[in-house]
Length: 393
Image 1 (cartoon, helix red, strand yellow):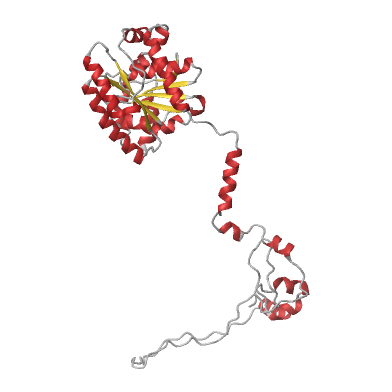
Image 2 (cartoon, rainbow, N blue to C red; image 1 turned 45 degrees about the vertical axis):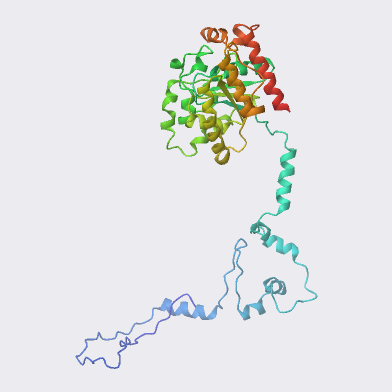
């Protein structure tokens, strides 16, 4: 190879190849007369210089990874050190006096992927990661998330959610209430008008607004609701992972609270499923009447499906008899039926009927604040002690 491509001068063009049975065209072919090209003087000088200067290999930069393949004559011209560095790794025999090139190999491998980087992680890697996780002091404790659920309406879900949360707060715990009911009764019970809030849990579930932006501080912190929640299930129907939307939203504030109490709507729709997926405990308020107890079977079936597909850790903390009127035989029989069918799941505490439960929301407060020394307030203090005792057992 040289600087110029040498071509033969005055060489007639080659005739095209013909096949054996192809007819020969004897028609005369007009050929242009060959013109002898006289070489330019500068071309002759370059050819002489090319013949006088031997051809040399291109020296690669140090950053190129692939070695240069040399000819036999180049080995004679290169010094001995280059011969040893260029020697193949898998040679047929090894030189006993070959020096150790470990340092040079480390320098050559700098920037390359090593074999240890290509293999899968071993069991020791996972053990090391577990040890590091145990030594991490910044690991946050998850709060107890309690959902109050029953597809039957009018069983004191909202009353129980608010007053039990305030009873936890009286014991020194940090509590957050979440109003998932489009009626907004829990929000109104704290003196907040659901029609005047700028943002609500609808924006959290549908528009991915941080839940901290819809929390209002009253007796306890409350994530407010609005009538827009009535359309949340339709708006979330095309959302991927819609059942876990509330669970993901709670991760922002989980380090700030010890208890999260969720008030659910009287249905087993997507809002209630979000609450059960985010919760680890479920309290079922049951009015001591026949129709209210029938909904327990359907709630158990829904909870079983959630345990199998979404949240295996959720469980029923207890069944709470509410609105108990001890003067009637029917109420006493209803409690006996609950205890016969659900045994220890039925709380020992009983929430009896009291006019204070109807008067407190008018003042925008819980029963424990409205009339702290009343029997109605003590019902939920006793319930709080029982829930805390069950959690510590």
